[in-house]
Image (cartoon, rainbow, N blue to C red):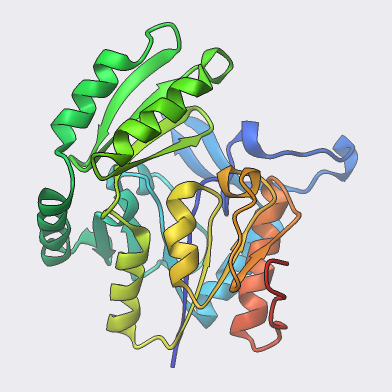
Length: 277
């Protein structure tokens, strides 16, 4: 039976220049591979070692890139290794098969959202009205499924984010602050549901996952084994679970470590993690 590996991308496997966290002397910094270009500028990186590990993982398991990015944003990424058959975009709103969104899956998701939570238009209107123009740079809607703000983090009133989370909770939505983005996402829109569907289709009997943000929590809890890096929302809140390993590594080297952990399990060389370790 195949092993399914569903991993978040941004700040888990790939990193912007601002998120690399290269704390060693320059001469000892790892060699980096650019894996995303946007508007003719390099945007995201992984170490060259991580690139080789991901190539090996793609040969040995069903690797599923799993992201809150829209399909268009995901398609900018050029990951090393075999082209994944499956990918999860828009936080589970789109299940890509050979690069094409599965229409039946998307229809199921949109029906579930219409039935279980407040409409996107209501949330979008609230964000436009309540957010302070002093720290908001962009308002965005992603694939007509959820909304997010791009903000100046140093000017952001984080109490406002907490108040938004309470407001959203009462309407069946969740809020996540990731770097310069504040996401408002319907609770039924989950990466874990899409991962389970891919596991069903592939017959995988073991699922592995990694992620750093609140929007990855359901994915980590649904997987048989999960990992989170030493940075991000989940690390900041001390998120843990019996099947989750909390790694101390931060920045781009955490991505390398996560891939080593995945490969160790896939190859049968990984020891069982201690609960909450």
